[in-house]
Image 1 (cartoon, rainbow, N blue to C red):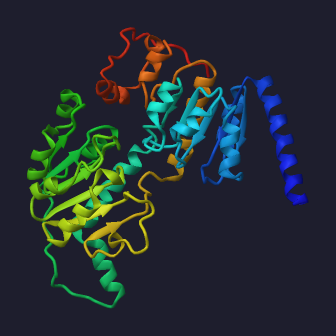
Image 2: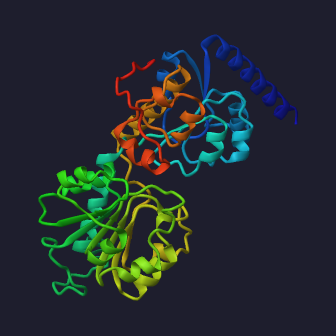
Image 3: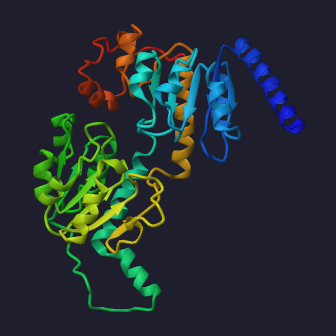
Length: 382
């Protein structure tokens, strides 16, 4: 008990010193949890911008969130930031999530509180698009199952399941944002017919990629291969369910490197068991990690990777730097090029000064906002 009290006293002293330093430096940034080998990239960038940086990775979640009450900016990776947590924040101006999606943050509550929610939408385009193609090729060429058979001592020149030529087939991309577009570019000379379903994409952009736009139901009927590249939103949860699987060609291969809940897992397993869908390759799941007894882990026609599509040494450093830069930009009085809740800028009276990144077009269209008319670039405070 005495040891615990001493430890608690030392923590309080550290927090008091940290608050004093924050008032000297101008803003406090708290990294709640990350799991990376180091946070020196964030520390160097934020302190160079005049802020105080606290890595709370080794503190309990309760302690870390308690620190956030007086933080100006918060960095978070997987932890859920719900409305109850947001209501306790006293001075927060920005929450930045390490990654593209922000479904672990209550955007409505943040917007109502006047808090900008930042993300990093352009850090792993090459990695995820390459991984999606790798999973597709594995499915087409039957690589993983053949490897497992050979590990068991098999060698069979007669194929137990058919392998078909890719050339001349149709690839359907659900989502033609930065990653979906990268897949289309990388496979542009593979002899595939490429179609896409995306209600927010610029038709001229699709034309330049030689991609034909269509609706989701038509894509499901026409595509031999389907690759998912869309965010998790209320309207995309279980976007692929029983009715969509029923429309798919018999023998279709499905790849998901976007978000797990965009697929109804039960409907997927049912369709695979009925052999209407030939194979699925998944990097993301409705529950992560999937339970040990999940049928996904043991299904003979599913190939799995453990949410690694985003990863390379280079993309991780880029992610950490970009997240810290977005936080420091807001805390120094500027606005990031991309954010998950552009509506908050209207609430803050700062929408007209914002210069949105090109990847923000779909979010603006979805929210009914038009990009500020003045395209004169504003100098970043960093």
